[in-house]
Image (cartoon, rainbow, N blue to C red):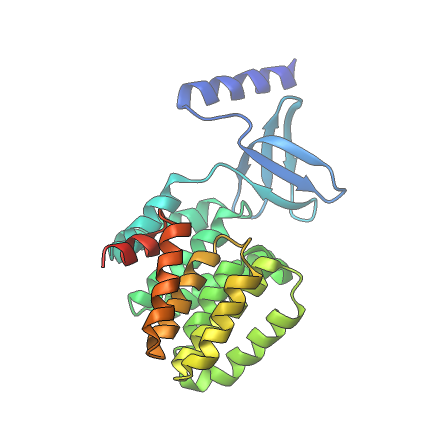
Length: 263
């Protein structure tokens, strides 16, 4: 009766508040899964309401988890893109704080790092990176390649870091089993080459990203755009236009494509 009561209360809560009970998933250490409404605590303890009842798992008992995408994430990204850094920081900090171990914290951390860097607050950005690294340990960047990319991209802006970041990028490109992570690294190495005023080398890395990582849709549109920018830096306007046209044709709804189309 107790399990059934929990389930009924959970379903009613979903109906009343407009949510879905099957809003998350926990993959357990034994390979099995629990699907339901997931609630996370800051210490990594997760509680999930399922059709069979409510279950609680501590760190070490599960491999990964996810829940509803918090609305503050998209709101924070939008605030960042429009230059409202104070609002972006407030919204994204909330996601990192309230979604421990639910995947959204690492995604929010990527945008929060970008926000702090844009606001000239690199120390706060480093704090966020350290917090996520501590939370997820050695699996941090396999889970969140976008966060790693933002971190390494920041390093490319500092000449004294060029050797260190190139070593890291080469290792990721050559050894990572994650296609997403390798794609981000390939493109970031192109960014490094541009910082080094080597557009011909940069365009090679961007082209590799375009042709070898087409399935990585979080990366691919930006790689097309940056290929065009690199050709522009080489004063090859014809090829630059070809890639701008491809971006608009393949990803018409992407912000970069809309930016190009509006020029």
